[in-house]
Image 1: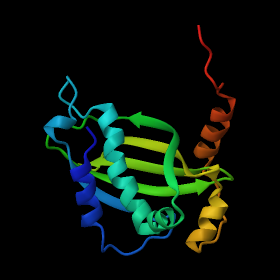
Image 2: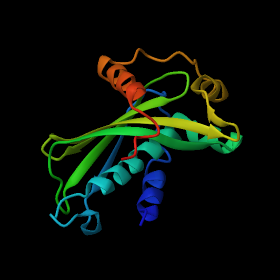
Image 3: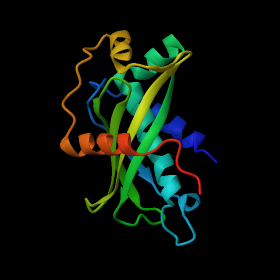
Length: 178
């Protein structure tokens, strides 16, 4: 089940945090609860992605995106992700999630998030391709930025993100069926 109570807590917890620029870093802290575990007694990989939501939505709130989405009646969706898991997170471990928009192109915003344990080790890292959606489909980031009163110029995509975007362009869709 989706952690609605935890999401509400994060939104309430960060409601008075200072506004962030679109590429600013939002930091949130979380505890791995027993219901977050898999059968190996560590943070379930799917639940890790759900915990990343708990960092990404307050980021959108602090940058002013949530207010724009509500005003325009737009939605926010994830159009792809690449995850790297490196360290176990066990029950009651405390983690810090760092979330930021890295860059954008004519259709998508690329969001980078990482999870860090209390020893300072990065436990996982994810790159999301996100999109704002409206009645006509994907809303171009330039239009979203304009509605937010921001400059539409993206920072240059880091090489590794540009390589991921290029690799995704080669990926067949729909996938082949055997």
